[in-house]
Image (tube, rainbow, N blue to C red):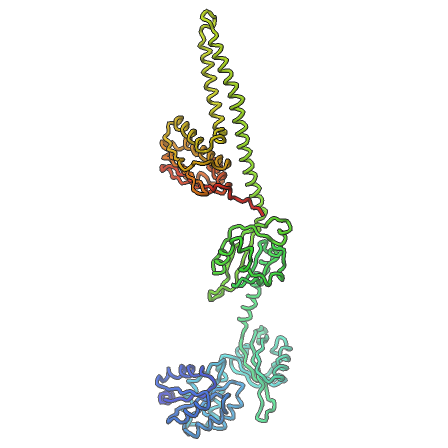
Length: 619
């Protein structure tokens, strides 16, 4: 028999296909050509195409769709039989089209190909049977056997029941799906008993009876062991030839795993929503186009609006965000990057009443689907207003402290210069007068002790002047930065025997007093550090004024140090001098850069605007 089937299939050369869609053509080719690569499938999906096929000179097999939309399928069957009397004809049909198949069998149909979810089930097998057995048995009995074999072998559950629930027929897949061992046990019960919720059957009966359609339902059924499964049930009403109601016919698919996955996904989404809702961080979910679709309670509290208020809000069109320079970061986030935005001061409806902006820092996270496409954008706002205000208060306090320090230095300097300096000068004058008034015969002719006192007074007076100049040189206020730096570096080089190269050629005009004080203190602190730690033999100081900026460069050839270790936070004795310099510079709005390595000297570079640029978080 296998040899006959193979030979018969091998002889198949021309196959006619009559259907409603061109999608059936590749499916038929793919099914037949592995058995016979030379087979030719000719397709028609309208009356003109049918006429061309019937005009052909050969047909070894014909496939007809049971429900042709453009003509009557039985008429096409008769036309092919008239043209080629020995040509086997197969019909492609769903379970709901069984009545058409029965009519075709009576008209001489050779075989039946079930269509399940657009798949042509068992097509090669049906073709073999049609080719090998067309001359060996009657068409009706052979068709029924073929139909039964295919009915039991399809991978979905098939059934027929009466409206009252009596089960007329089920296939093998249906039996196995519900955990029964044979058909007889299943046919012995009523279909209503299979439903976890019997009202589900009543509901779909009402819909099917009213619409005479084949809708799809999801319901739960009991297995024989008492377990439950979820199924997708597609039901149709089957009538007899007189159009009287006969039975229900349906297709069952086991969707338990899908429902379990949906339940797990729903639980996961519920946990996600709970976490989002309870999070103390403000969270906003948006579409890739910028429209807000979800916010949590913390977000509502931060911005003073509810989720319903932001349905028409688009972050990409937010004028305040644009004006604050947020959009480059936002656009990067919407393009698929994970972005941390710098802190910004933003007006909320509540802050508009107080006149002081709220500070926050935001992170943007894109959410992608399995294909890698951006599905949503999550923006998380951390309210750092209190920390920022505390930082601003600390910065203002630091500024006031520096101002107070400078004021006190000036006061102490004046006291040393005016009071103590003048007193010492008066003492020196009196000593000179006392020494000149001594006569040769005076008992104090040996005035060596007077000379020693005079020397001590001179040294003390020099120390007072030096201390006064270090605290606040009066010439900085009177003559300006350039002369003061020349005087200071000259004394510094002479006292420490260090070569200091000074370039102040571009500094021809006075600078703002506060700026001159900052630059003088930076130079003073830097040269003091060099004297204490660097063991340098040469120092270079270069001060340049260009347009609206002033640049200061100080280099030495000393032993250098590890900058990161020296300025690291948490040290018991950090580089307070360096930190103080940096604080002065940054508070003015400048930049402070220092490069050094052990054995390679140190390079300090400061750049400052002529006018103060730093804004202390003003609203």
